[in-house]
Amino acid sequence: MRTTRTLEKIAESPRTDALTLSYLASNHSPEVRMAVAENVHTPLSVLLLLMKDENPDVRYRLAENYNAPIQILEELVDDANPYVSWRALTTIRRIKTGRPGPQWCAA
Image (cartoon, rainbow, N blue to C red; front, side, top):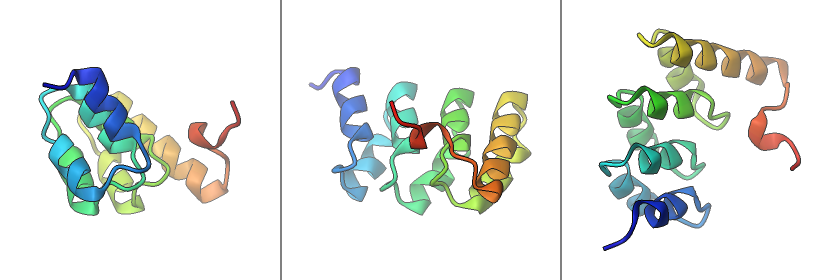
């Protein structure tokens, strides 16, 4: 049995395929689902499911994903959680103005 941290690392990897990401999106751990929400290879159908995730931290991670389709971010603007809503709005504004987001910054 794999640990949550191992599954999280798999979900974070840009080499992880869409089928595996789809499987990991239903993991009981919010940390694993958050990693799936941030992966650039996560299929649209999975992003749509994560957009409705019961955990606001998962939705927040999706809302700050600059690679998420704008339609998903626009839906998250109306999220019941004000932090998720604000993050989605901020991400949309940054995309539209071409301002870099967190994952574009050099470490």
